[in-house]
Length: 136
Image 1 (spheres, rainbow, N blue to C red):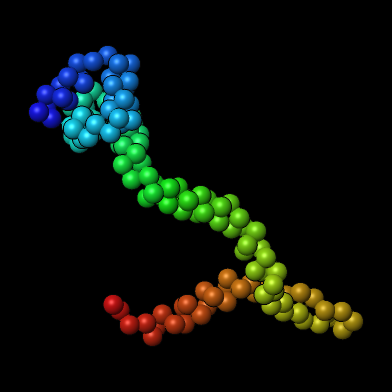
Image 2 (image 1 turned 60 degrees about the vertical axis):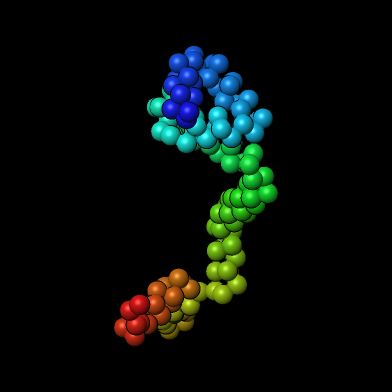
């Protein structure tokens, strides 16, 4: 039966095909939707991107609570990624850098020779701990 439904959809023009599939998703017709979206996209005349979009819509319609959780987690991840640079600069400002000075030749002032950042310290600690790591 699924192959007959897919061949029927493959025979439709793109406009009626998309409308029929959208209607099946909205009505919760799992027989039609699983037949069309359960196989490869080309079997039902869909391109892969459109197939993925309809499949996502179908999953969202079937499990709205889980879909809402996924959307919230993606929004939180986007929020954190957008503000990551601000966070790292704030941490660097709070922790500070190690500045190494040397006296100048005239002995009246200090010259900044090197600045060690927190990231460099972390890398040094990680490198020194690598020798003692136990492979898992």
